Amino acid sequence: MENVVRQEQIEAVGSKYDAAQMLVVREKTFEAIREIAAGITPGMVEEDAVELAKDVLAERGMLRGWHGVYVRFGANTVKSWNEPSAPGVVLGENDIFFIDIGPTWKDNEGDGADTFVVGANADMARCAADARAIFDEVRQRWLDSGDSGQQLYQYARAATERRGWVLNLELSGHRLADFPHAVAFEGTLAEVGFRPTPQLWVLEIHIRHPQQAYGAFYEDLLLTEA
Image (cartoon, rainbow, N blue to C red; front, side, top):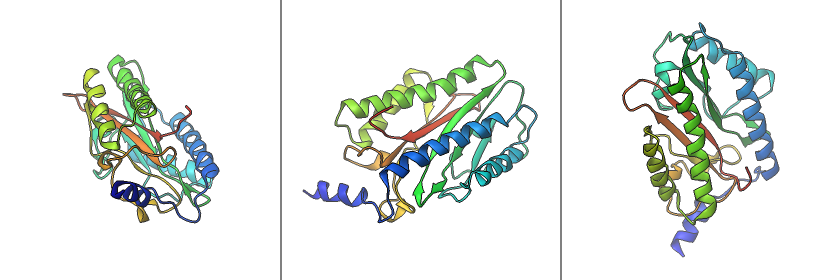
């Protein structure tokens, strides 16, 4: 009974929560990510890409976010959300970058991240693809099992290691709801001992090369339908 109460408390939503709007802001979030990515080209400095991202979000009425705007190039792609980027990093001809945004729309929160590759580095391309593949594999595990958040990230680590990458458990999922979700819970998905409810949690997969300084990041809401 205590576990049930704890889950109800952690998964509580506020008066402005709107399940339909959560799906709208999710769609808008990934549309913005794709538009930002289309404007990023080799030779661009990371700081300019961040300003581009802010401009795109402002034009879409989505600049107000519940977390900052992150664009990471090259070696900065191994950094966690709380680590500042090394300044002045320029995107190379054969390189990797990710975009991570958390806009709010009509008082409901969005959050999404995806990784993109320029040029012809096959290992970087595999890294970006594997971040999405691991997300899909863990999501399927969530659909098929009664696994808790803790168990899902144990599974994610094994799925990552099978592919030869390292999983960053500092980025290990979180609540998402009407702003601010932190009123209900500020912890991570990897901490919770119950099966997460659909459309209330973000699954984060941040992987990196075991020796080289690059990685990939993908995150999205846990939804029962793809």
